Image (tube, rainbow, N blue to C red; front, side):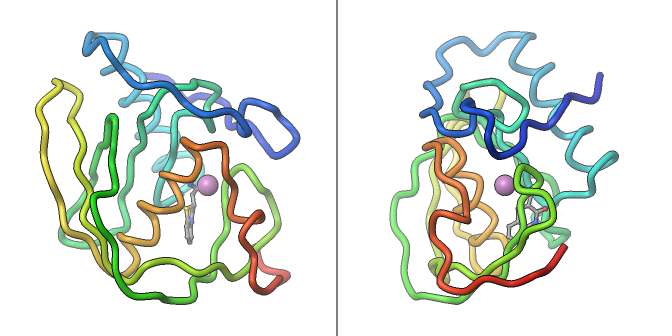
Length: 154
Ligand code: GNR
Ligand code: NI
């Protein structure tokens, strides 16, 4: 396991669309383990997407500290979403900036794990918000693109 460097806004890797994972091998497992380590130990984030560590693959990890614990998503698809909430966000790739964006209240996401097994999950609250934030990273979108209100946080 190793910590990876986090790319920050201005780096064009954050603006590209990530590609599907097609090979479920040890390299994928290592990437996911490194992302978990980078997210939780160094920066204490609640989520991290592969493009943030410079890898343009459709992978993210999330741990919002709820009963779901640590979750890994490979090739995620947001199947449905409902409701709207205002979400005050920050991003490890956008240092020292915060702001409010609109997110769904609830969603259903389908994805694969590191072995390629499919699963579906219903999420709400902070978990749904974080999943949307990470999903956006796979599309090259940052929360600052969607601001409804600017804050001076983090
Ligand atoms: O650490 C993070 N906190 C956060 C707070 C509100 C909404 C989303 C997030 S995700 C962010 C980590 C990160 O940048 N993930 O891509
Ligand atoms: Ni982010």
